[in-house]
Amino acid sequence: MLAKLAQRIGGRELTLLAAVVAAAVVFASLSPVFLHPNNVYAIIRNSTELMLIGLGLTFVLAIGGIDVSVGMILGIAAIAIGNLLLAGVDPWLAALAGPLVGLALGAFSGTVIVLGRIPAIVATIGLLGVYRTTIFALLGGSWLSGLPSSLSEIFAARIAGVIPTSYIVIVVAYAAAFVVLRRTPFGLHLLAVGNAEERARLSGVAVRKVRIAAYMVSGALCGIAATFYIANYRNVEMTVGSTVALDAIAAVVLGGTSILGGKASLLGTALGVLLIRMLQNGFTIVGLPSLWQPVVTGVLLLLALTLERAAVAGLFRRLGGLVAARRTA
Image (cartoon, rainbow, N blue to C red; front, side, top):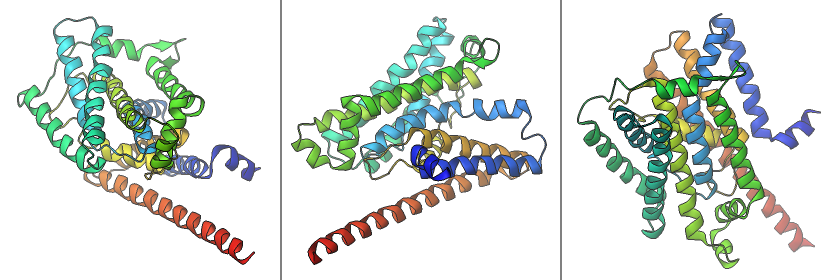
């Protein structure tokens, strides 16, 4: 039965689900506070921005790309939303500014990478510096604080008195991403580019447009995440988004999306985000200094990369065995 479940869900995803359950059991045994409804709600609430950014990075990694500037894109979008709220703009219009700013920055990042023919890691490290300086300039060396509570009230509202609006947004976003990846030409082209870019080009796929579009999707989702950020915290600090990229990349790779491209797991990304936020919350409750939390995330990322390398090595061994068998025959 477990074997059939693993085939339907995926071995990596099933392992992650077991890790989430194990983490819950361990932390609950160390502190009765961990499974208190208020703490569970806090874990899920603190996962919302990372869920969206991780979803966007799933598209980017699926084409074999990467973007370490996603935290700064979130920060710039959050500043735009915050300034509009302070100017008295309707909260729904202010919220719309987030994905629009993110979309524009994602398009810029993708254009620099694709048309400039710069390796994604090099380009986005450079853009990380540019966007971070932009944040400092926009904030003028101080926090953007005292924001109205209008967005907080919108996303804290509960449907049927039970389900927060923010959760519905996350579910809809992941459902839409599933349809795009599995049921549309764009999704098929995205995975084809990640699997074999030159073959996809020869098959008529507009590779450049697909790659830029992946970064645009990621940017737009960062912008939506910025809306949640403003709703949750009602301020924008100077260090906004500084650890987001590490957490998001770790969650996506841990979830089974290949950093080499061609494979994407939305369920894995969601479980990876949940595991990282659970660990961070649990370590805080048991008294582990916050300084060590990025270490845990880094270790998880290294573990995920090790697992992927082992899987790739196993694939090459199997291919080599098939080639040898055919030659013998």
